[in-house]
Amino acid sequence: MATTPRMPLVDQTARSAFGAIRGHDGDLSQRFSEMYACFWHQGELDLTTKETVRIRNARITDCGY
Amino acid sequence: MTARWSPLNSQAPAGYWSDESGLAAPDGELGTRVEGLRRAAAEACPGRCAELISARVAQLLGTADVDELEQARAIRNWHGDASFDEAERTLLEIVEQFIIDVHGVSDEQFERLRLHHSDKELMALLYHLALEDGFTKLHATMTEPGE
Image (cartoon, rainbow over all chains, first blue to last red; front, side, top):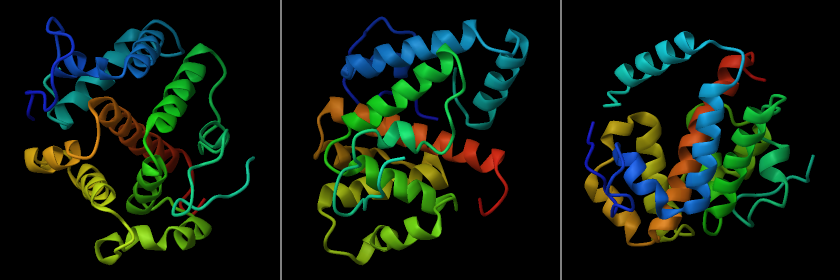
């Protein structure tokens, strides 16, 4: 999968292509960050289950992260 | 529940994205944040783009109900419908490729979409597309066929 952003970078220090461009909409970026943090730090599932799903998802979709 | 609307004639009424998400938000902070992101992305999309994306995703994933199919018949046949402008046609082209095989979305298609939208609008469109794809598949997984 291409990891070269198709949009101008907003955050040159971001660790991922998505992180580098999502600041084009600050409100959505903030909402996504808060939702994602909430997903990993709260909820019914343990971290092992969440990470297993994340890795499998990344493998199937050819995501580099 | 809000009144039905036609994606061809208007933007969704206020409250639509939170009231008719297809899945009730689970209790708790995560559910609230997910719904908030989803609603914000939809409302940040320009014009009727959010409605077009949602209708086409539902059609392609086989979750659109009869009423929605009737309302959105033109969207299904957008290739030959001159009522869709170039920006909408480009968007629908990318929506279809995103659902069929996201790796097939080309640089050329993305550049054409950029001709019609600001970078901020692009983020809203892509967030909304990704969230609609995910939630539509989630809904399909958690419900019986035909529901």
